[in-house]
Length: 153
Image (tube, rainbow, N blue to C red):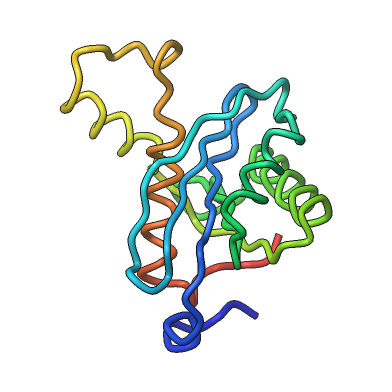
């Protein structure tokens, strides 16, 4: 069962969030005490598989108390095939990192990240400058505001 907001406030910790994708996996870092988040990096992936050694180095560096993976639900709230792949990534992340992993609804996070990025920079080529870390940041900010809505992979 996920921590409630009151429990989260009593145990300040770093949190890492992931925006899963088949070519890029965005990462963000946040802090439960301040309820703030920022984009961290974009990991390259091949068919959804990241360089696990690189990903685990980030976990070792940040020592998070929690990992959050975006759950890409359809607009109507139903799960798609991509949800199955994101859940599989979350389960692999849990087994490789030994950290508690939860998933959080990420509907429209990539669209919002692209909107935010396009208003702040001239380069709108998302293949060259992916917005996945910003999308992970949006997922994390949403979880920090409402952790009770997180679900297990």
